[in-house]
Length: 101
Image (cartoon, rainbow, N blue to C red; front, side, top):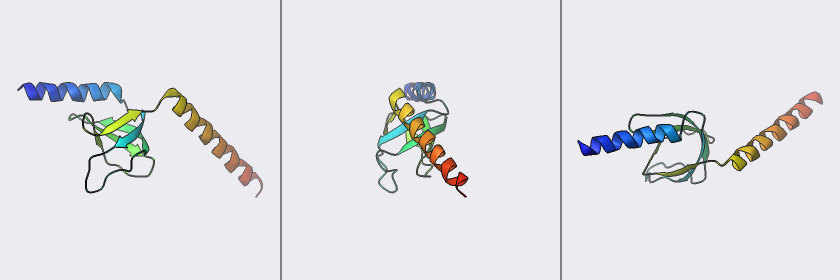
């Protein structure tokens, strides 16, 4: 029963660390068949009761990452700001292009 308690604690910890909306980046996934590429970013949708983190990956994939097995991390505040600034620039560019029509 000890492994059940450890698994439950790991899952709860993953839920605390990666609530929905958290931006993450994959460092490495040990999936020999169809891994997500290293460096891919995504937004957490949910964490299941086994501790698997399910993000919407920016590349459109939907494969979960296992807390404690796969390597991934939260984006830093600086990285989040950089993403927001790029998004703002892209929106401004799209607006300028649409106004020219």
